[in-house]
Image (cartoon, rainbow, N blue to C red; front, side):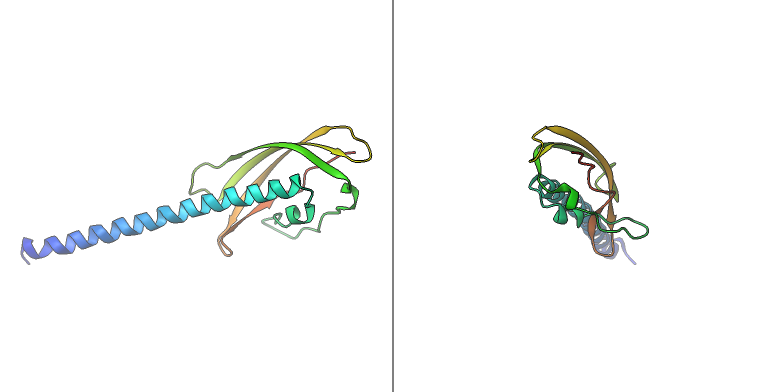
Length: 140
């Protein structure tokens, strides 16, 4: 086979390899974007008192979890939050979230804060992120 015939073959091979690498990069960026969206949705649900929605993000990697008892959280008001997400890279299938919530209960009006540190993990079967942990321990 002459060099003139091999050139189009190798050019096609390089193009295919570049497209494949680009697709993998897009998948990782999409996964990272989904992590950001899941964490923001969880944080906002806690912030606005929709703890049932917040609890829907909790899914242990192993075993089952009983639904949290939300009755003791009636009257909870979150006034402020800060959070950080630490993932090793966009390819990571695990990320650490650290959050601080400032809150009060309507019957006490004493502002307190609680810290939460949990691991988020990627489930490739449903292509979504879940929190392996519990809701913050809001104390009266």
